[in-house]
Length: 413
Image 1 (cartoon, helix red, strand yellow):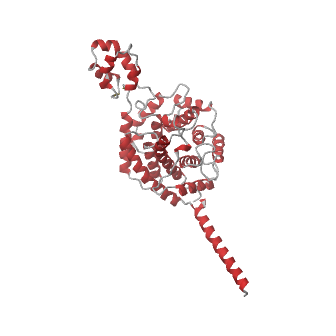
Image 2 (cartoon, helix red, strand yellow):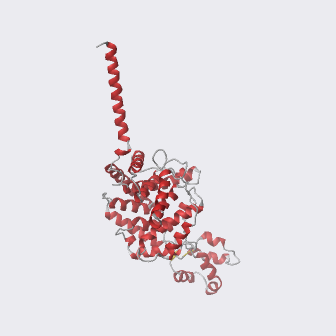
Image 3 (cartoon, helix red, strand yellow):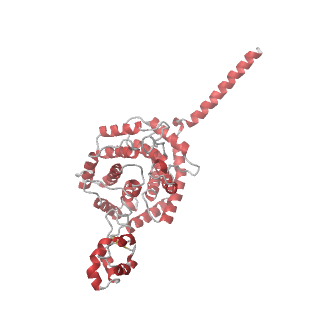
């Protein structure tokens, strides 16, 4: 063989070998190679992060919040339901902590220094305000308990003159977090994320109180107003936030309705409210939640319509961003695949596989997923973004785990 032919043959073999190697690498990253076993492994690693950070939040912050404790419980319950190893003793302890925390935030009266300062001295003299200082921030579940403490601080004449204004000043609004069991968003997620389980949070003693609180704070038009994380910290107009909150609250209450009976007035009003609102197709959380809402309360055609719009809103990298034109993030992608797996209409295994690939490739070494808060929140202040990054880091990890779990057995494996 001539030297030129030998060199040409060697070159061809080298090209062929390189092509094989490149194809092998591409195959490793290809969505079809993300097996259910790989998903289980990824979620198992994320549970360590969710437990560590969730327990730290409980210990250091002392509140459930809408973004930590409910999602700590929900992610672990979903993992348990899909056969992953979950410490049931710890899960029961978290349930009990959450139950007690919510019950401690059902107070009718709490006198706050800020509110007391707003009262005109003509209506409540400064000398009387000074006597009320021992009441500041002390919670009371009943009017009787509040008045009993008030009687130890004021004279009978002062009570006759000022008791009414003190009561009015100290009364918590129905939507206040410390009156509404930790807030509507917490209550709804506890119902939704624990439904169908043996948790103390779904037993009638606790659950019925949650439902009663949610019913009490529904607005006359059938909607619910979100807490600060949903209303003021996210980059969406308030009407969209109200709609998303109302859909989530209605979905949380729905499983506890008796299917054979007429829907309650609360549910009917919420459905009527949502039907009258203009859509916000640019917001992916709104869009994903609308799919779930129609799955529960709408027709098959409604589900198919909104589901297709959610599919079409996917970014080129196979993930979803929180709103149109925003880069993909783990939180929105986890929510999107959770919804698509919950409401299957046709064979979307390739979509789920591609999204699973996107998430598994972006998982951090500690098992978590990052969600940059700047893509979602309104603030541009670096310090506020730093604080919110912690929140969305956790939230994004929980939604990624929950979404991935829901795809098991539905992504072509």
